[in-house]
Image (tube, rainbow, N blue to C red):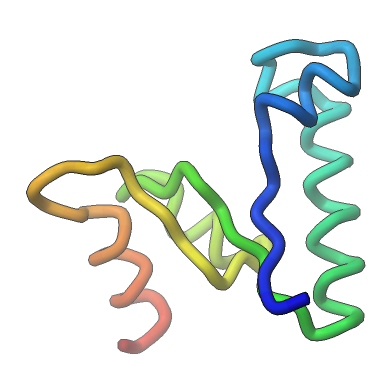
Length: 85
């Protein structure tokens, strides 16, 4: 496996908290997924990177970052800055 991208909508449905992406069950599930992927050196993607959460997302261990389809990418720019790229 080269990359894991968490389907947050599907995951939240499965956990019984549909579309509640900040629910504690979701936070714990994401944390566990990232930990298992780190243990096996598998990249984990985050589909909702913004300029506001880029530092947090990188700190949580996500290495494949996706931003909303806009003409500018402030989330990606901030993440690159924080990653020294």
